[in-house]
Image: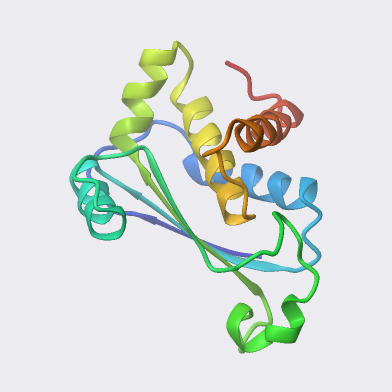
Length: 165
């Protein structure tokens, strides 16, 4: 797995954020039975930068906690069958890794939401990473039935890593 983590803000987290992100990514890949080595980019930024990205891509002129940019068009969530048929679109030609997508997280939101929800910033970062990973696997939460499935998957990842509220 190639996990590229870029820290693009002066706001500091006082814990090993790289380890947390890597653990959640690996557990998510295992739980969703991804049969490939993957390439994934994670950017940790501030509210101003994520607000600009949110406005550019979603026409929402406000900061958000996490943005997910999946590279795969799944027939159904986590259906990895048939991806090799479109190898040029989904795999890095140099490494053969599946190009899963990009995750952008606001460090400011991690800190504020952790306090709001009464848990650690480590737990909030883990949750946002798990949430975004489910989006990269094609899950969504626009409909109630989808939301229930996605939340259960996120919870299972965090529970298996013993990351609790």
